[in-house]
Image (cartoon, rainbow, N blue to C red):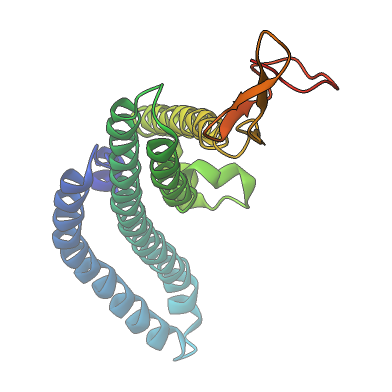
Length: 240
């Protein structure tokens, strides 16, 4: 038990968590030999108690109960330590995935210009949408611990300063990237809608032009396309 009290580190990364888990597995095997020995001794004492010797019962029963309690306490502590280290490894793997997602987001957003063509905006919008969708599948269970019923092992994890600080940093980083990505997506959507909202054009038929003497002397030889926004609307025909 003293060994477990002195070894509470959960690791600051996947590799460190794996190293701690390996060291604990070796200690676990050795400690369980002591647990098994204590339980064998308890069983022997209970056999003596079953002989119904009153003096032996009064002397051995408290000792058997103490052996049973100590064996259960040690085995329970060993198992909790194993579970905490497994949680640590899983947590750091999830944090690693979240950090990779954030890093890819920074690279993605910095490569998209703020002013681009409609076609480029549509392509970039597809890429950003896919990136945001990937972010929604991020799984960092320790960040949601207080949204669900916490268990003892997760609470042990959060009692370490390193873990709580790291989780706070990861949560802030994920929120920032989601906010920036959604903001850029909204801007790209506006760019992509430029073509859809492009003002309509009006096709004007050839017009006959008047000569100075009032006779019709010539006509336009081509169809002219006029943007409605370039000339004021008038019930009269457009003349040149």
